[in-house]
Length: 432
Ligand SMILES: [Zn+2]
Image (cartoon, rainbow, N blue to C red):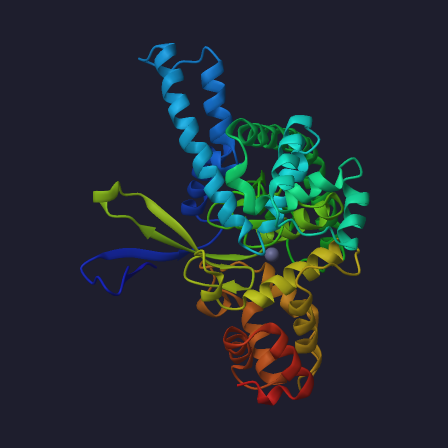
């Protein structure tokens, strides 16, 4: 049944037809096929920092020409654009280097290009003329020994303080740094794409085993259906803020991104974590779009795993149970890989653990896992659309008090996960 609801409360003239759909619906089938066609195209230009500069240079030096233009004209335009693109790349790096979280990616960009003699000499020159240069600490010396044994202290210093000297880098050197970065990314992307089939196969084997152990409540057919449309891209963290440190899953695009800067030892774990997100149950809303904007049906996610929200907007804080969704995702990931621990979502997992233990009765972890993988099924009678979620919610109500999970989530939004852990340890009844 479809119902008519206002698309936007501020605009009651606009009435769109909306309905909840299941993952086996025709609407979702069509949506998956459309996305597949889009995703099959080239990787988006923003996947790697410096690509615009590399392309400008490519046009200047090659005999490539834009249709209806002479080669000379194409080159002239590319040269003009090159200057602008270099400028905006510098601006972006300066902005990023002022951001404590994203600064390390800027640092990596320079360290990665230091093996180039000209670049390293140019950076050295800049650091020598900069009087503010700080000393290299003992920790950093160890870091250099381990990760960059062929790099001199001066060049390391140059990279470290580069953020304050970005404008001082000569154009030709700066361009070379960006082009080298794009080349390195392309090499890594090639390796990533070669590894992908093996990674995916390993993931599916692990899932099959987990199904046999009955810890993952899905049929192989559902696993295959959910994973079939998923594409994975390597992503440079210089061009985007990932929702998670080293990866992300976008349910609206059925795409996962893995950070190029991810340490190799964490590669499998992060890939599996994002794939678990992709395998999670979902609830979707289909909206008939007005003819004036081309018609068609828009599909948005109401829920992905245990993360609830009207749509997956850029601000994750507007959604319910973000912490719980990540705690379960990482827990399932670690179970799947038979790993004891990881550095991801440690407080979230601790809070989940406390939630299992601290109530009037113990809650089995499987309750959460069952609800996580359950998709909304509109074909079933109303009471059976999401039975595992209902059961989970009722059991938490019983172990604590009615509405406790929602109260806990609201408390976390007002404070943070760590404060919630403190109260759960002391006296959960104080969480209001
Ligand atoms: Zn996650």
